[in-house]
Length: 373
Length: 247
Image 1 (cartoon, one colour):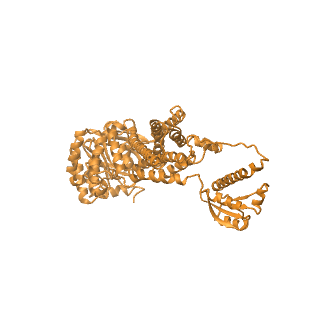
Image 2: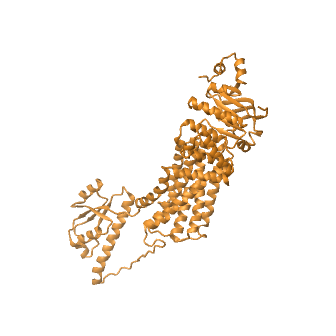
Image 3: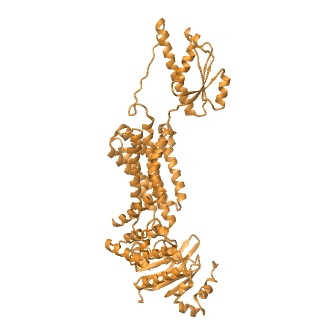
């Protein structure tokens, strides 16, 4: 116990004295939490739109003003012909073309079906898909308005229609941040845990100080605990700063579920991910090697964790990889507890799996860490 | 000097693949003596020291350190030895005092002992005004003296010094050897490797390693007689010239 006290004291001293590391621990997560959710926003705004109005009627102007006032589109150009507008798309100045054919108003008033033409630049699939669907939605609304204005007068047709109403549970306003911020928070904790822990131990290898420790009677478990505990504390600190600082004050996210349960899971998760850092450090002999290996894992962990994309959409083999990724479970649990208020019963499976990861990774690390070469 | 054996090796060998770094070395070191372990670069000195300290597992052969077996009782050995590596390995981002207290602490010194020891140590080294400075900022000579003091802070039976005076000026080298003598007077057996032949003369007995094997082992006086040499330099040249890796 006393030995551990000395080891921890030394570790904390070194961490607090490290002028490069400390700001990274404190400032970086906050800045990242402020910036990343904005960058990873799925909502697409400022789609550049070219309009080819060949009708020049009050109805076509009405439609155009509806589209431009929706907030999603920016009028890039008002072309006399489709070819001219297409040139804009080719030059990347425009993403979408809405063509209103001549006779638009006349045909609508005569109740003939009228076609509009929408051309989409699909180089950026997300932007194109969302832009197209926003535009169709606006046109549909516009269409309904016209029907209401004109149809009741003649009452000739009343088409039966199914209207679908959505209720968005747990995130009623479909706020993007509510979904993204807890996920990014999870990633930050992962980076702090795996990276810093691995680098710290490998640094001692590089400097040769680990050898000096290895000739002392310090036990293997004492040394490992002396490394794990400081980073566990830092991980909890980063998570708390993110959750109570940035998430709450900036994004207004207040966890619905039990905070103790969240922290309980956080500790189990950190032990698992620190075990990974430890394992990397036992294989690497330079900080550069450790960095590269840790980077490789972080990228896979991030992209295969359901942070950005739903896991169900992946091919089966990729889905299996995502299920072998501890980050997947952590992100899921963080979202479940913060957004849905899930209880212990709901995360029991996650808890068991994460404990498994923790035991496996740490046992491997301890087994592979040797005082004797 | 009494004749208790504190280090005893029997055909101790370390292979790295096909390369034999240390080839069946057998020798004894007696309690309280200053044992010089000489050899050219790459002769296998550091490998031998690392095996004796329990940092490296031997490939074959036997050895006991302070009466403990090198294979099965490494943790016991570690309580009884001190080690100063070729590479300076105290924490440069901790202060002089913090390093002393840290290593004293993990060697299990009691709180009072630790306090007294650290104050005494800083005074002996003349580092009172530097005790709160980061170790990284003090000159190499002081670092080496500090590293030596830390290596014997727990009053071990044996201390292993791997080229402790490399890169240090002659005055500091002299002071360093004064410290070694004082430690030996306190009953600590000194096992030291060096390149400096004048330092070899300070040892009670020396062994000279060439290409992984021990070629000579005796007191400096007898070695000089044996090789009909004026100085240890000549003895060393005579032996090392035969080595494959002689530079």
